Image (tube, rainbow, N blue to C red):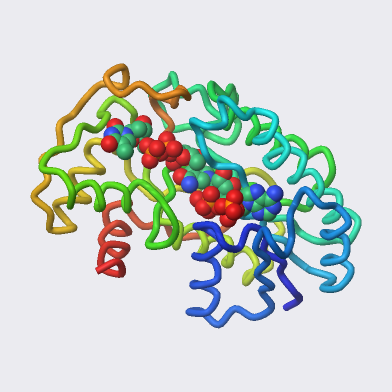
Length: 284
Ligand SMILES: NC(=O)C1=CN([C@@H]2O[C@H](COP(=O)(O)OP(=O)(O)OC[C@H]3O[C@@H](n4cnc5c(N)ncnc54)[C@H](OP(=O)(O)O)[C@@H]3O)[C@@H](O)[C@H]2O)C=CC1
Ligand SMILES: Cc1cn([C@H]2C[C@H](O)[C@@H](COP(=O)(O)OP(=O)(O)O[C@H]3O[C@@H](C)C(=O)[C@@H](O)[C@H]3O)O2)c(=O)[nH]c1=O
């Protein structure tokens, strides 16, 4: 197996990839954090591609501050569209397969049926828009790519909803959490496993895929289970979206249909609660 360049290595998914690759003994991963390889610096990227001649490139680098993006659209766009474009062009030039991660926030989320890859993307936030633009710039420059749209990522690494709930739950007796946004949490360790599975199996069914854990829940129900499984007595009060004002609007329904990933990539996907249990076990 050749080299795999991983960009955004110090973020949540980057750390999960390093962890799973070590656990499974996957060789050839070159982990590059922002300080070593900024995806906005084409010359630096070219030097890395020329040096490592990668067979695969996994992009974990992104602008992910959903609310802040509403005030920083151009900065988010530079990273999520232009930076991704830099990687896509180099992948095409060097014959490298690009594995990229996108989001459920590319959807408006006004429906009530699991979303397929062929459903119309119509982002309602600046973050979602720039992530969709990133998908489009990849498709414009190369055919040798896998884009995995995922949702509600969490893990024992970096900042995420599970760790925020555990921290707030220890500080407060009661928390108010939105119950009218439905989706599926995704353990970033499972997503990292799926990305490495594509590489290990040499899959060439290129294209766009949806990948989250199995099942459906609300942020409220997710929080209730985080506390129940995490052994905390914090009371969780269900609230409506309009009772928790945020700068960015989030999709009301963003459950992803994983049929294509299961058939074309041959991955087994755990239920979100099973994976949450595993994450909490590791955190403890
Ligand atoms: N987190 C979530 O809930 C979800 C995430 N996703 C997608 O999954 C992917 C991974 O997300 P996640 O790991 O959680 O995100 P993180 O924010 O944890 O990681 C992103 C990483 O990218 C780095 N980065 C930012 N700008 C650049 C740059 N110009 N060059 C190189 N690196 C850069 C960040 O560095 P620094 O922190 O120093 O800025 C950070 O280390 C992203 O594409 C995201 O859009 C999809 C659905 C849900
Ligand atoms: C902390 C907190 C959040 N919430 C709500 C706000 C929001 O609707 C939901 C999740 O909030 P967060 O800010 O943790 O997560 P958010 O930034 O909305 O998460 C999103 O991140 C980007 C990167 C993605 O791509 C998405 O898939 C999704 O995971 O929970 C509460 O209702 N109560 C609370 O105390």
